Length: 243
Image (cartoon, rainbow, N blue to C red; front, side, top):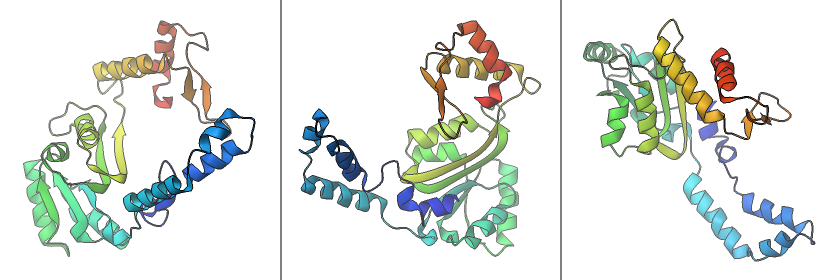
């Protein structure tokens, strides 16, 4: 689905479609009594065409063979690599990262004996790499198989994701896929409590919250629903996986 979103459905994957400006202008011109109808009339055809040409220059048409990917290697990097090349990606455009020295050595041996001996296998933490490298990727796949956040040595889940955003490692139209879990009370009571406090404090002042209702994906916020801050914290703690 991610490859399709970046190739066949590329122009359907942008926040604003190519004809967005035309649609906005047409929408407000429907009602001539609306003062905004006169404002959008100032939007000339020349300006709209310039926007559409700029859109094309940024988005462009892409095929799977031109998509650049970064992923976490593990001891057998060729497994994911095989899956990606089967979808049409060029192995030369795929970068694998491994920070653990022992696993990296295993990955090198495994890759050399596979049909991808030329794989780009980087011995580095993926987050640290983005800090020092100007490389940009269309797809970044982080199969952490660990909690977010994690204090485990070599598994800096939150730092890696932060680095991707901070150093603009994704292309203007890019996809980041992560596989992380929330730390349970049994795994790490302190981290679980910190996550609950963070989520509850962030969401409490929001006037609306997202819901899973397909017809209307918003619901009133905690304050509108009459929750005190303490009551809201307790609700989030009990239903953290829903937030």
